[in-house]
Amino acid sequence: MGNRQSIAERFDARRNSLNFIRLTLAGLVVIAHTWPVGGYGSTPFLGDQDIGDWAVAGFFTISGFLITGSRLASSSARSYYWKRFLRIYPGFLAALLVVAFVAAPVAGLINSNGSYQIVDGITYVLKNLGLFIFQRDIGNTLTGMPFDEAWNSPLWTLSYEAACYVVVGVLVSFLPRRHVRWVVIWVLVLCVAVTIPQAIDAVNLPLLFARGLRLGGFFAAGATLYFFRGAVPLTGLLAACAAGLTAVTMYLGVFQALAGLPVAYLLLYLGSTLPFHRIGVPNDISYGIYIYGFPIQQLLAMSLSDLSVPIPVFVALSLGLTMPLALASWFVVEKPALRLRRLPSSRRIHEQSWPA
Image (cartoon, rainbow, N blue to C red; front, top):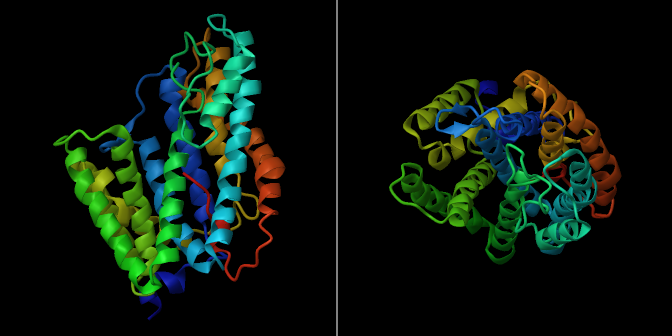
């Protein structure tokens, strides 16, 4: 019977390696951006997705599982939304301010092709306050850089993550809980059905819509496994099958449409079996790495523009320089913000959740 334990029986909300997995995924996002930001060419692909796309998919499947648990464990919709706001927004706002009034001014000093004006930093913050990134650059501070389009490219995913939070909150608030799981399944089916033709280039959906369906599908896959966690066994054999199915979706070029469930299952298996449950507990810096890695790489690319630096060196410097900011984000912004929740909780599953 031990080999046939369900997800609910094997996944321990207080002792798992999901924080380690998310830390790894955040590192992969930084690594993926090395090529375009450092001027090394295109990011390497694994199948039909680059390694950054893989990491984001992993974030959303984990988030779908954990956030669904958070909403069901919350005493009210109000407490749920407040906790989600405190987990995502203070860190996001701090990142906007740091980029606008620290990173960009530094760039104005070291980038001979650009200059900084404080009004550009102010508009950067004001236009992006709502999580949707309407202004990606700051004046001409990135002029002449290999990637001159954005100061903090990964932030675009946060609005989609927040939208998923809202959808889960609304479903649980207004539908009988026994019906929510079936609605989530239909949402997953809808996302898959519309994303398949997009993945095989049969249709060309607007970018905002296409991204929402793709990321929503991964989130819904994680949520689906949460609802059926008591019925789905969590075994090494099924995890191997999930890895095989993921490889097939890569080969067929439909990863973004069909890989949600196998990726979610595989990550939950790894989270339940890997012996890294102490990493990221109680201090989770994966969010900080995610939101500060890109601006650090932009500054690094400026500083090393006249040098021929091998990719491994650029990666090591990127991660090493991002780590102090990630630690500061956790201890100065994120952790103090989380103390404002002041809400009792019977589970800790939601405490591990953060946006992709």
